[in-house]
Image (cartoon, rainbow, N blue to C red; front, side, top):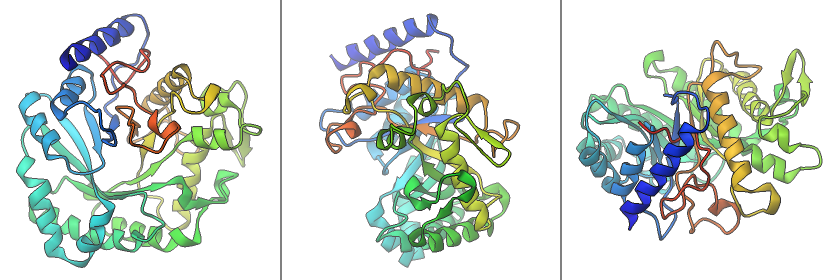
Length: 356
């Protein structure tokens, strides 16, 4: 039955790809694969879906040996799946304390799965731990894991971490943004570590950006059109920069804050972005989620921000998420998936799934 559902999903998406105009699949946009559900497809079925779509980049919230084994069994050269894998927050303290622990972590979680169809792009040291009780371990863990990867001759695999928008304050206008007092020292250390590396192996900085949550918190002052990339007039001007959508304002606030602590040279990746399809009435529908995803996809593929001109463009982004997850907190958190756990699409106008 699950395989039938996979084929149903792909047939629906194939139909939609012939009846809608999509850009060519972007090599810079991937998808997040969360596993907080008790009814999710098996890793083999996940890889079959990714293979049927043109999804080449996957972000994991842990190391998932069953999934990594399924990649090798399902995907064949010349196809390659690029992975960003996350070190669980509870592992940071031991990795920060011991270079040997970092070597052991790489030896257990990465080295056994190296093969021609699996490309480990980034090791993400914790997810949204800055600020927080584990934040003090992030940079030391990054340093030890970087050394462990070099020791294993994985010189193209970079280390980074993922922060949430809550690391910022004074975000309006974006040029006034700074890091919070709780986050500032850690972010300074993170920037210093990344800049100490040669530019060719310098990791990115990942930030999770959700215009939906800002809109939902203040619908009286933020229009849904500006949150969905379809504003007909500018939101505001910040000096000589004009903002037409909320995402750009949020992204640029992070760029400004980084600039103030010497991080201008660092590349900022979008670790998560999406729009829930249910959970909060009329502001969360499949149609709105589809609109956000399509416009986000096109924006990341084709444009920059006022502070990041199109000639520079975005290095990359990950859409959240592959599936609805019923073990997430009740409400909108359970409804960010492109697919239901039965493999059927939540909405069919989906630029993330191009049929080969």
